[in-house]
Image 1: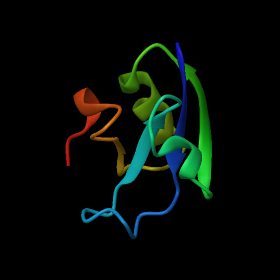
Image 2 (image 1 turned 120 degrees about the vertical axis):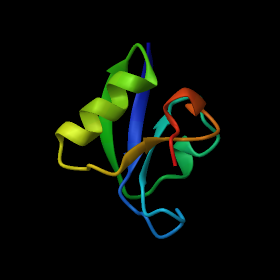
Image 3 (image 1 turned 90 degrees about the vertical axis):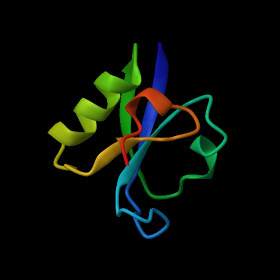
Image 4 (image 1 turned 60 degrees about the vertical axis):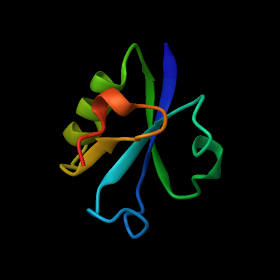
Length: 71
């Protein structure tokens, strides 16, 4: 299981998505404004958690969670 965070900032994302990053992502520790999502067995459950917290544009990071990256 990996720990996940969601970037609250959307200005760097061309589609305005909130990207979800796993703890082994190169972007993970660079996040300064984020929502902790806890530990998940997959990016799918981490993205679902972000959406359940009121972030309908949550999307997986294309680097660390390509299976969950849709935009």
